[in-house]
Length: 141
Image (cartoon, rainbow, N blue to C red; front, side, top):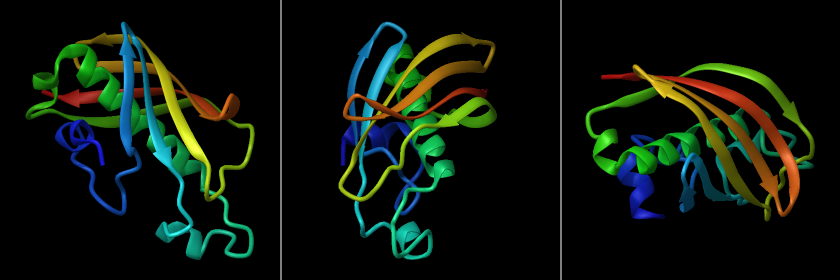
């Protein structure tokens, strides 16, 4: 587990859905999530054909966005602040995410002011889009 991820996010197993921070360039970020058959949701979500629930893919994108924003603003930004998912728009699921896949959690921060953040987020497996959405967050200051 990436130390930066644990410093920025309050989430822990089984709800920590980002394994590592990869890069940040301006408003663009990338993190990864290695999808394992041992994750608890696979026991009950299509157990004969394990598929990562779409809602968890969106949550992983939201967690990656929080990391991307914290890196862009400086890690001290995240101290004492909690971001809350406030909206999901234009969510689309394009392919299944299954055990053994590595999810690349990417996005572009399109707005951040007065505690409000908007991100165009995309989850990829290889170069294939698995899911995409515009996410909105509010930050408690």
